[in-house]
Length: 331
Image (tube, rainbow, N blue to C red):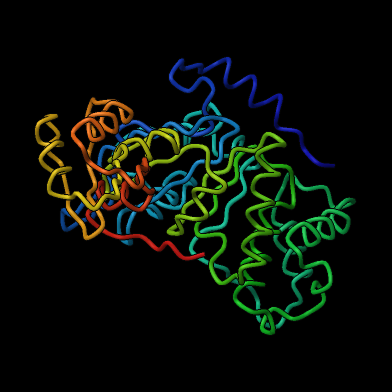
């Protein structure tokens, strides 16, 4: 028989309630991983992942994202700090919490000689909470959900990287999950496969699953994530909503005009210090000034304004500002 841990979790939450974890699927405080040589992989990390969100966990290579995920799931021991998953402190309540958590970490792996369906069967058999009577049905449903329904009998060694990635994701979905932790889930997928996985992530969030997504692809983050945290050199540099991240760099005003010198002079008289010329006009940081006031002042000064546009900074601009490094913006 399948074991229902939901009652057990509720009892343990009541027993060890901490107001800091209310409404959050993941909470860390002071989370630190330090190696023997003294180097920090993660330092004093305070994460708050809202329940039901799609949470983008971002940063350059070597920033500590995978190390953090491994600590959350008990695959690496922290040097210091606290971790709460689904309202309970870890690793004390590992047995109660982890059956409700699915994960895809550090790329796919499987037995080369086994078909994908058999690999999932072995994964499911290793789960003490899984019901053997429903195993075949659940495996079929998980394969269909990741687009491998027709490839379940194919041997793993014949799978492409994208198919292997999908198979591991199917393994994370063999049972209903309250939290899904995905490390680069679209790695190796073609554009169509990437869109399908994004759609699946949105669907899971709609059903109430919290998805924590580590990724380098900004298009992926913008399209599926509601919240984001940015890690750099093991330290948190930003945490909030996607709109919070966009707002960091604000907006500029792009003015196309043949009267560039007069436009620059007028902008200086308005007290606007961030003015950048280009062949067709200028870009201006309006600061606290309203865009319509800037436009009106240019016209009053005799500037022939051919085009006036508000330009919102991209996520890539915000990432570079926060980390000093570029990110992969490809689809």
